Image (cartoon, rainbow over all chains, first blue to last red; front, side, top):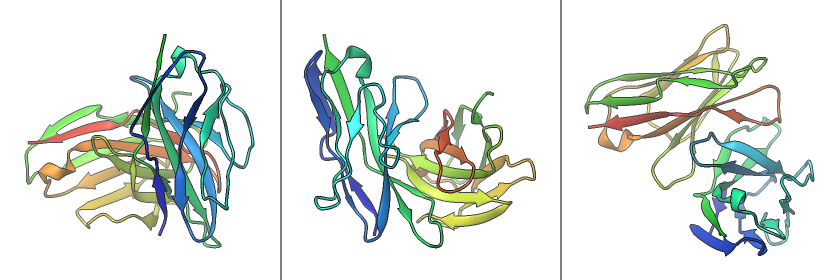
Length: 112
Length: 112
């Protein structure tokens, strides 16, 4: 079964502090992991995906297959980072499984 | 490009009624997926349409059905509405596999 767990429902940090949003997954095959972000009153949008190895808006995430984790990190949080963050998994199978399995999300608040 | 557009934005229905939600994919996209997002939860996969066929389905009852038209737009139909069907319904479009899914703003359905 495919499952994504985000253990923190709420996370609050001060501006300039490091932030880490945790994500653990369960999947027997080779997963593709994503982080999606939803700013207030905006649509869900892709923040980053592990296969591209990009750093978007200062955020990075490394896939750790041993720990089945894909934590999202940023060294210095900004107020504009306040949003809802969802970790998602897409299974890569020969049949081309395409559904995204989302975690319940973490609401990040960056205080001034 | 307007991106993924969904209509209506809000909808109130009575228990037992039927509802149809609509989605126009991003220009150039041929695959449409539907998700249900209950309050405080992450999006949950309902089904996906490609070439006017349902390609994959999540764990939703047959009351949930869909359709994709030749212009790639899609409809989600829910029959015999239950109070528990109240949620934000998201449409996501993509092209090819694997690729980034772009989400619409969603339709907020309230069943009373």
